[in-house]
Image (cartoon, rainbow, N blue to C red; front, side, top):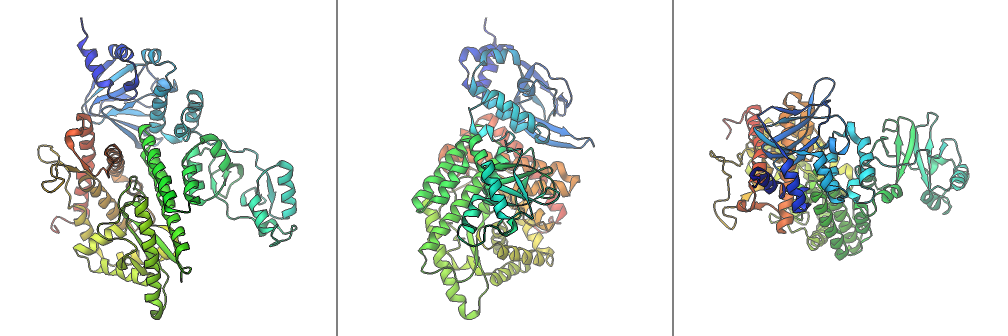
Length: 639
């Protein structure tokens, strides 16, 4: 006689990883042993400190929240598992007591999968364990699991996945060779030769790192005759050094090196330059651990001399993106990697364009990315939004200077278009006269937008508030930011206009919990995930962070996380918004890769019931944050 319950379990499991890669007989064997657990809202499945049991879990319906509780009984949400997501895999991986608490976010049904049966049928299946370990690394509470995660990776996946290895603790040199501030370069060079090393760290009397000398420094500054061999090390060392903490992951070290364009990272006791040097992580250490990785793509970009080569390198990032999503790598890490690649592509396009110009830039300038790239949220090829700010010049030289930068911008935007970033349909590009201005003109432009808000001013300023420097003089952008925040202090009305704009798209569900879709045009009956779900969160985060006068945080999820930090009373709401945004961005990106487009418009009938439920769950914070904005900025009578 057939076991109909087991068959229903089997029908569900076979559509979700890692069960979708099992043999049919093995999956059915597991399905026969699965227990079904029903949970009311707020019911607890297991608590932090509980002895591990003999199951791990998958959500069938509903959602399960995993959170960490600190010594002050403050809860922090680590993850929300939806239908098809696995959780509670610590007993399977580490055989340790639970370090998180799992409760039902709503009425839920959970499948409890027996570990002994699962291990018996999946023995030696590297693909299955690769997925489970990724899930463990993604959901683990990092401050408490970094060390053990590294051990787990080493035990289970010695060489199976460079991406998973990214999350293990970096293997740096524990006994760095040093010299003191009073040493001569000759003394330092003798040490480097004796120990056969490529760099030496300069430390003060407290063994705090103050500088670094590499073989390149000796070649460029001594061999060229710039300094004599007996010169003090302080004359040729690079200072200050870049530092990090002892338990940094390979991915952390890699990002630091990418960000600061360095090959050596000093490891100190507390992660700052004000504590004892304990090690050195080199670019070679990272490459040995990772093999092929984003650094290879970045190196290819930096060496490219033609647009065609840049396009080839950027296309590799799409393959990397797809791989990361398939392996469930945290979206926050994916965003950082792809954003860095996008910025490096743009910077290299600018360098290539500068070589084609008849003369060097007449004054210093900064190329700014705005919109999604400015927020570090551009994962797929979308249209380009950018601007140029150049140093003030005399009125006599202004037009000539501006003409130079407009010509430069035309070369750059043309190159970016060939790489795959379409021209902006609204012409918000540095090649257009409105978006290529001197520092003073940009200050006046923003002051006008803020002091005289109207529909157009709000639209334009909203896009341009999300900017970041990609190439050139950072101080110009810093000075512009100071001017903008000074103007904001004088205009409470502007925040009301921003607030009204943030409410223009209501929560994406109707009265009967049906999706709001496009009503006419080419996109009729399609769901616009960007306008109806992502933009309300983007607009809300921008308004809140600006109202708190917080500079330098442009990413939407990071803005919400900062708000959770400075407004603990609303911490749960802001964390929910941050989580929802990342989940929606991930969903949009997957749709874009699946259909080879931007992922902006979604045909709802192609989604499974579970996918629709996941989307709807992300809409709840939108409604709550918009209600908060209405009250905080007194918008009820301003609509």
